[in-house]
Length: 423
Image 1 (cartoon, rainbow, N blue to C red):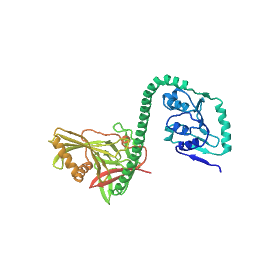
Image 2: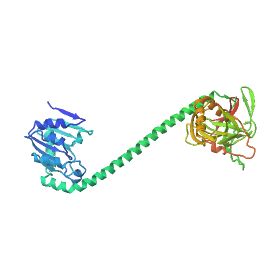
Image 3: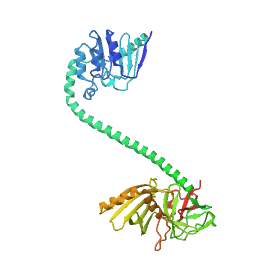
Image 4: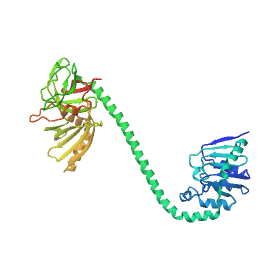
């Protein structure tokens, strides 16, 4: 009965079993080290063993092969030969053959190896005839050659060990860079999913906002004026950004005042100047000069909108100056038409550390009151009396040429303009 076996693991135990049960053995292995070679090939003191390997200084300098092991094998009666270009790993006797990837080395026992073993006489006979062609090219390795090699590679081993550390460093650097790339990619995917989740939540919140009975189709156009080139203008002449109907009641916006404007396609907010047929000058920061009360302190606030093309977990940054305390706290947050969420401290400037810690603690332990105080101030319309400030409409919208629907919403009685692409 023919026995064929595949090993996807260390096969040295099977080698030893066959070496003990045979009288003669041929072993081909480019690399040879202890203790595997000695365990397999010296297990049978009556064994006639021919070993074919690659005798090159590089292999011994990097310790892929061991001169000490080869010496011991010769001293115990094994015959050693060099075959230039040998890469095959073969164990061959009259009744057994093993062909695979595993070298006759100690490291081979822990590597991911694969070997095929068989006692098929026809297969063994054919293998002998093929291996004999390689053996005819072999050159004997003597003790003297091993000793000469030891002397030659002694300084090379020291140099190789230095290089080995550099090789390892290079491997570590490449691995670390790849880990960073993978981490960045994972974070990018997480961020995309988080951005989508935020936009879904924003769309849901928008549906719950009381909105105008009608929407106005509009797009960004070059109006040809010298003052403001790009404005958001209605598609039809009859449309009017000032007059709205909400819940059957008329809501009139004041001309030239700044109103809070949100693009529902990316969560971007700004304060836009509203006229009858144009919405212009999108401001990304607003200073509230009038002092307000937050907790037990009087404050002045500055709102800064995040207009980065890369979506962020925050679309607003709020700078709070606490009057008569020398404390300034800057918070990143996210406004989603319902709440101010994800409030996190960005920077702190203070000459009074204890007062700053007291204020921060109050903000952290009164999150709802703190959030509501901030939200109330976002909506208030205002008028710039001295000059026109802000960006043109094409700087506010990420896809300015696309047709979009504009509506007016009411949040806590305050008007907010909403934009959504016409898909």
